[in-house]
Image (cartoon, rainbow, N blue to C red):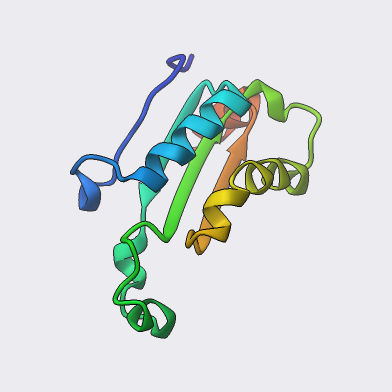
Amino acid sequence: MFPRFCSIRSIMTASTPGPVETSIRDKLSNLLQPISISIYNDSWKHRHHAPMRDIGGGSGETHFTIHVVSDIFKGKTTMQRHRMIYASLSDELSQGLHALSLQTKTPEEAHTAHLSK
């Protein structure tokens, strides 16, 4: 149904992942044992925002979209799933990671979403 682990990089960030993205991937992989995980660095979309301009555009690793499918999410609400992720990335959030857009699904939810397309 799904590959055990796959990674899809945004076209806009086709270069080598930076330290924040690498840390996110490592921590979430260890915590969630995902069936699939996709991490997109959306920081380039926010470089013109006042807080980002004030720090010279930031590190280029301030905004991410994360799609993750994991059995660990079974029986958990969306809020509980997101809290797990935010808690695991507390160091990154305290050091400049500004925003996460999360899509968290169980394998069954991902399969159902795929069928409805």
